[in-house]
Length: 512
Image (cartoon, rainbow, N blue to C red; front, side, top):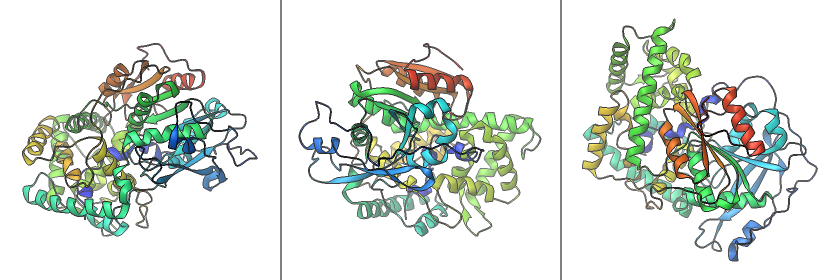
């Protein structure tokens, strides 16, 4: 059983997961399907593409009707770009066609590990305006190792359920010893069930896949909208292929220069601040399980968390909900301030003994349906990609020092962000990435979007990425929640869509 499920699954919540909570709004997306099942634009390799990669760039793509009124296709890419002739893997794509559209807009919801194909069918139809839908065919894709694209596989559904119910707390020495042992078993299972792919699900390889997709779709330049981790994937692409950047929107940016320890600390601070904002709104509202001042309410929350640490709650279906699974559910509504009332209601229920509403959010984070089926491999892909992308120091003294600092800067959630390096301690494949600047010298204008009170990707990360990229503009949303486009206001939406369609970035310093 894995250490993974006993540690916080924070970033796998995805950039637009909160939209899934309200995606049942009315209206059916329009869809027009061309007569031909082959891409109407003929793919061609760029002049600088030579040798064994040419066959990948010049492959034909066959589109066929699939579920939810869209078309699906498969693209082949090399398993290992250093040896592209050795073995290939399949990437899964889907698209929603707009009659007359000559451009393709690729979308990525983040994670890493969240399915772009699911985003296309579940949330994208309600995000884009009619103008964008007329201009672009929207294309979803699952990056390598994710969803339907040669997925990382570690556990059975039953094993996932079992591991989520274990009350193992990394900050408790005895539990930490058990987690170390479990991390060995988890790493072994992932390697056995996934094979050599496990060493090639890094973001650089995924960005190279994007360029093959671009060419196969018949586009000279890549038009792309990425949220959260999707900004890291998009910025990596821009740095590798600056001359092939078209309209590139990076919303809720990650900072590619920071270490894993810095990432954990800044996210913990971000969510700590969002807890304060939510608690104050709760106290000001009509239904709130807390009372007194903000400081008193926060103390009540912390005491309740401490109670669950020692006495996990049990759901109506008999599942134990230990503190980590509880916190995984608790943070989901914090991604979007429009969901704060839902969190207040869920916490009222939990403090009365009914943990089902919080467990619903945790199941949503883990892609578990009511029948106990995990509909995606998001958690497993999240670990595999992160273990390759960033070195993690699993020295016991280092992790202890980092945990102490996390508890200092984020007294409510800090401990639950600690000891993440245990996930990769026994990983069979060493990290291939390292924190570094991404400049994309020579690219067309790139649009970075940041939200001032974003808990998952703090605003300063968007500022940093916009500064690093040699030709980028920062668009700012003054508000709460994770990412901005499609969930904030008309000012943001109009600025983003004007850039996507016409290539006109807003004035530097624009705030909405």
